[in-house]
Picture 1: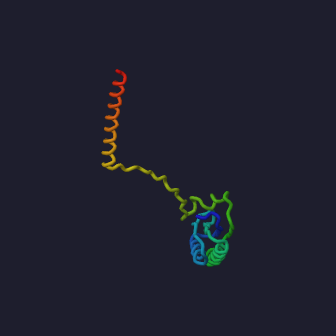
Picture 2: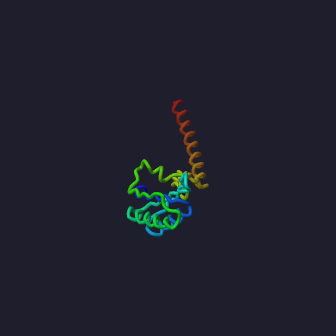
Picture 3: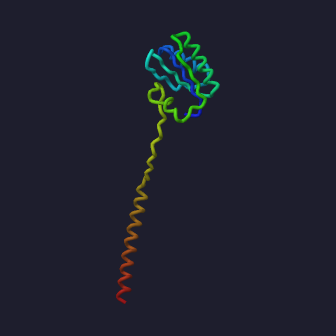
Length: 145
């Protein structure tokens, strides 16, 4: 998700009008529908779209024209590059249809040990024990002399 793209907001009166506005917006220009957010009072819903500034302006104009067929539009706004401080207002959990990006979980790497590796490790351990015993015997012989 490119947070430096333009955002368009269309506040339509009535959910059916808002759905028609969203349909007109995404069909008229190359924009991505972020989702809609239900507003308190008068049954208003805010449609949120994102994309290139020219495409967002065209989409908002088309949505406004579509709202005229229904109960109407209360307000529209195009924000060229939203500040990082207001992103939480645009991209939030109250926006129906918006899914926050999920950070990938850390990959757990385990080493698979084969039977051959286990056998080699056991053989090496036996050789190390034999070498240690020989070293002890040599040390005892040197001490006796």
